[in-house]
Image 1 (cartoon, rainbow, N blue to C red):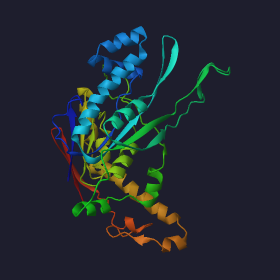
Image 2: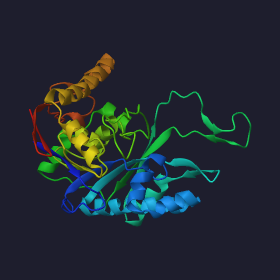
Image 3: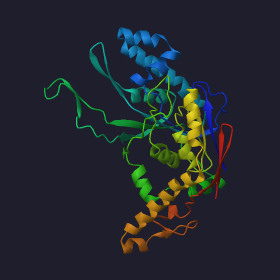
Image 4: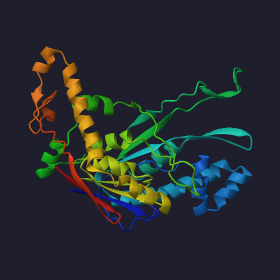
Amino acid sequence: MTTHKIIDGNSNDMKCIDSKSIDLIVTSPPYPMIAMWDNLFSEQDQSIVEDLSKGNAFNAFNKMHSMLNKTWEECDRVLIDNGFVCINIGDATRTINGEFHLFTNHTAIINYFISKGYSLLPDIIWRKQSNSPNKFMGSGMYPAGAYVTYEHEYILIFRKGGKRIFKGKEKELRQSSAYFWEERNSWFSDLWEIKGTSQMIPSAQKNRERSAAFPFEIPYRLTNMYSVEGDTVLDPFAGLGTTNLACMASNRNSIGVEIDPEIAALALQNITVSADSLNTIIDSRIKRHLDFIETLPDDKRERCYKNGPHGFYVKTKQETAIKIDRVACVTQNGSVITCSYE
């Protein structure tokens, strides 16, 4: 059984979450210097409005990251030793006082976590598929005046301390939480080409026009890559609860913190789903694996191993204990969702 919470509050103070109680953090924060987030940052520091109006762009940029750092400080407090932090962040481009600038959000976040003693692990480039025929910004065909169009974001990965050690029952959980050989090859690539998700918000919002949600596949992969069944995953910028949903489909516990009460209410609605909808995700994962096995030549299929819990073939011995549980039922008690598994 797993539990899933949406907390309406500011993630720069998560006193409702115990220290060292979180195994993994997966999130996508507001992006400093992206105009849609100006109000959110300015509400907490009015001097940002003044900086932007006066053209002091990098003063505003640094103040925005100072706010994010308060949340990262809390994340450090609640994260277990040897836990992981996965942050989806995009850099920003913006013209201030007629000058075009790139604001490297990913660099600011990397610098913060390195200063806290975290290990910086190889990052992932999330390349968003774009239908736009224009691959530049600026002066069209004339040289020395155009700028490269950004079609990617970063998924930064940090580890707190050394490798996590699994003993006893935890070791068995790690083995049953393994991913498939073909998933490893895809998930641990440094380039993910994943379609973005709809940005529409189903009700009028005073603070934003778009949800800025990342697609389900991103937290789903990261949750399976860096945690085991029964772990607790935190998203301090929960948005519409996408990370929570990924955890529900992965047999992990989850906590989402969202500063906007209206968005928090929508997140709770969003994760109040049926067992059937979650099982569609789980069944699709298994089907993809079975389809992969079917593509193998006969001689390679004969060298496959038999998975114990499910009885299907797998490519390596490390996959023989994988156990993917379907959801039996989903229940709600206030702001807490509970999933029971078959």
